[in-house]
Length: 609
Image (cartoon, rainbow, N blue to C red; front, side, top):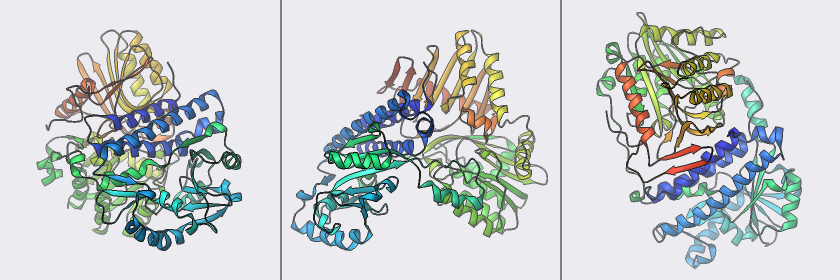
């Protein structure tokens, strides 16, 4: 059974939504998944739907995607009501009519002094220019736009755990926002924000971002009861199909529950994770690596080890530093360590990738900071650089970190990822060649490590070698959509090989002989692993790449072997636990997906090694 990548991804987002039903998750954590689902769906209509929308709009496949998204939205609407009912009386969201005179004494002033001056009164003729994701209100004569920086959920002063929705307050006092009092109806527009530029240099990035907000509308979300003639006029002004309209009861954006998650009682959250700290490494990373390699599994083993490794750039023996940076966030100790190394006189080079979807503005800010601190920002290649590598060079050799995740302190503590630290000369030399090639604008010449099409070629070679009854193949990734790999895996399975796939988000071929599963739990599964049982011994690789055509053809990723015996055993132990997981798993087959909940094996509770 074959699926469109977008179809498979929407199935994954349904799995995210279903986490809001889990009886073993605390209440606020279930609410958090509702907000994650909402953000995911907004991103789907802003980026992931691009190909079906631009090339096959109105086709049966495109309409199936719209129907699935609408079904999920209706399911989420019900989950929102159910979770709020469960939270009562400790957390409540009141309607305006439930507020008393004292409450209104405050909110009348808040609406007049804070909200009204920031709202925009817009003519209906400008409806076609509605901004992506913003909340709008429609009246008979005007539209009102609510700025994005105003909170959607407001505390009711003096009532602990009690809130009111800003949109509901505005509707109750429409006279503050319109020339005359009139009923208001809510709507949102989602637009295709994906930049069409395959390559944007730093000096072109601002121009590319300026034009992105003008993307084509892909979805209109309006409240139930929206006057039909107004809705039809709005749909036509936006150029949308009837199927590209979804009607819901307010709130139309469920990310507002993030406020409840942040401010609700701690007893309704997961207890804090206490990751294991590699003590010898934290004390002196370079000394520890001169002894042997180190493999860590985040967040169960402390992501701070990566930041400590970056700080080792200040060591006297380190002369030169290289790093690839993709999504690094606003505050980043690792990036700060690179800046400090440059200011201390080290030669520091970074490949800062501006083409990280929706993180471009943050990366542009870091670009300026690096330049002004004396960090050399490497020129951009034609291919997007998605590899995760940090290299400290010395006169005698050096030290390298290679990983499956981003150098982002927040993600590093919420995503499951593997880190490999090594001082092996053969690995350090190849990482150095990778960076040298990027600096010189050519394709890296690698042997032990692989990048580009060579990743696909190596994986195909291993799959073919395991295409027999005793063969064993295990892939773990976020997305598996590459046709050549999927066909090779299907042939191997048909020849009797055991093919285990742990694919979090997108799997476009459901073969009856695949043992395929998705894991969705407290932490986002993000690690990428390929393992092959060669004559009784495992060949094991970690990679920054998901198994998609673009990652082989249009990106520089890195795939690297785990050579250390203890490190290999650790990765295999994680994979074995995940294959047994019956608390966070969804089995994937041509007949559909089957959730495995309530069992004894929880792979997201890894024991400390």
